[in-house]
Amino acid sequence: MPGTLPLGDPVPADGSFPSAVREALDARADKPFGLYVHIPFCSVRCGYCDFNTYTAEDLGPGASRASYPDTLIAELELAARVLEAAGAPQRRLSTVFFGGGTPTLLPAEDLARILTRARELFGFVPGAEITTEANPDTVSPETAQILADAGFTRLSLGMQSAVPKVLQVLDRTHNPSNVPKAHAAARAAGLETSLDLIYGTPGESLEDWRVSLEAALSCAPDHVSAYSLIVEEGTAMAAKIRRGELPDIDPDDQADKYLLADEMLSAAGYDWYEVSNFATAETTRSRHNLNYWLDSDWWGAGPGAHSHLAGLRWWNVKHPAAYAQRLATGTSPGHGRELLDDEAVVLEHLMLRLRIREGLDVAEYNGLPQRARRGGEPITAKVLNQLVSDGLIEEQAAHASSSAPEGRAVLTLKGRLLADAVTRRLAP
Ligand SMILES: C[S@@+](CC[C@H](N)C(=O)[O-])C[C@H]1O[C@@H](n2cnc3c(N)ncnc32)[C@H](O)[C@@H]1O
Ligand code: SF4
Image (tube, rainbow, N blue to C red; front, side):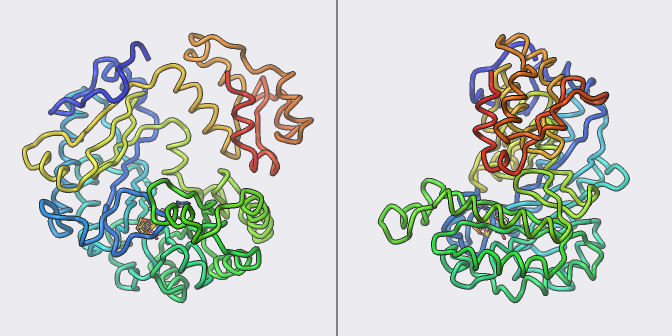
C-alpha cells in the first residue's frame, strides 16, 4: 500500500476514502466482505468487560434503544453511498455479525429490520453466515424463530460459566439454567449455535472449569469459544484485584485450564481452528471471525465499531449520542483512521496466521511485498527447525509440500499456550 497516513487521521465528513484505497478496491473484489453491527446496550455491565456498551442509566440524553435501529440503518445507507462513490465493485456480504453489548436486548423485529436493510443495500452471497450474539436470558423460542425467519443462521450465546459462584465473580446476572433452554430454542429454530466460555476467573477451581465444559458439551453446540479471562484496565474487576478483594489472574492456572479445554473438547469431536475457537467441522467455524484473521474486508457499523477495507482501518465515535448526532446530519460517524504501514501489515499477518489451524504459509509470508520493503530476514528452514525441536510447531507441516513450498508454521498444543512468544521469535 503506497504512502501512509499519520495515526488517527480525521475521517472526512462524507466518509470518502483516500485515493490509495479507491485504487486498491478492484483487486479485492473477490475477497470476502463482512458486516459487523454493534449493538451498544446491556442491562448491567459485567465487572470484567470493557466493551463499548451502555446500560439504560449510563446512556444519557441524545440516544435511545428505540431510535437506535434507524440510526444504524442510516450508517448502512451511508456505507453504500461511500462505496459507490469510491467506484468499489459491487460486493455482496458473505458474513454479518451482530455483536455487543447485547444485541438481543433490542426486540428481534428491530434486528430483523436492520438485517433486511443490509440485504437490500448490499445483497448476501448464497449461504451467507448471519450471526447474532445473545445473552442466555434474552432468547425465547419466539425470539429464536423471528431471528431465523429474518435470515439469521447462527446464534452465539454468552454462557461464560455454569458455576454460580464463578458467574457471581464475573457479575453475570443470567440464570445458568437458561443456557440449555436458549440453546434448545436456537436449535429448534434451525440456527447453528456457539457458546462463549471464560476460564481463569479469580476463585475458579479446575473442577469448576470442568463442570462448565461438561455443561457446555451437554448442549452439543456446533462451536465453542473458550477465552482466558483478561483483566482490562479501568474495569470494576481490575479495581477489586488492585484493592486485594479478588486474587490476581494466575497464568499457570489459565494454562492448565486451556489444556483441560483442549482435552475435553477434542474428545467430544471439537477441533481447534483458532487458538480460542473450536468447531465440530470446517463448515461450523465462524467464517466472520476467520475473515478478521485472514485480512479480508469488513464494514463495522455502530458506535466505536472498527472497519477495515484494503489496508484502511477506521473507527467510529464511541458514544451512541455522538454517533446519532453525526448521522442525523448525514455526516460520517468515523472518528479516526489510518492506512496500515508495512510494519503493521507484516506483524498482523504473522500474528494472526500463527493463531489459526492452517498456520503461517512461510512462502506467502516471505513473499509479502511489505515484508520485502521493510527489510529484515525472511523465515528460513533453520528457524522453523528450531521451533520444531522446541516443540512449538508441528514437524510435518514445517516441511516443504506442494501447497506450501517453504512449509507452514502450525502451532502444537504447547505452541498454542505460547503463541505470543512464537510470534516474537518469528517477527522481523
Ligand atoms: C460482547 S461479548 C458477548 C455477548 C454478550 N454481551 C454476553 O456477554 O453474553 C463477547 C464475548 O467476549 C468475551 N469477553 C468479554 N470480555 C472479556 C474479558 N475481559 N476476558 C475474556 N473474555 C471476554 C465473553 O466470552 C463474551 O461472551
Ligand atoms: S453482557 Fe456482554 S457486553 Fe454486556 S457487559 Fe457483560 S460481557 Fe460485556
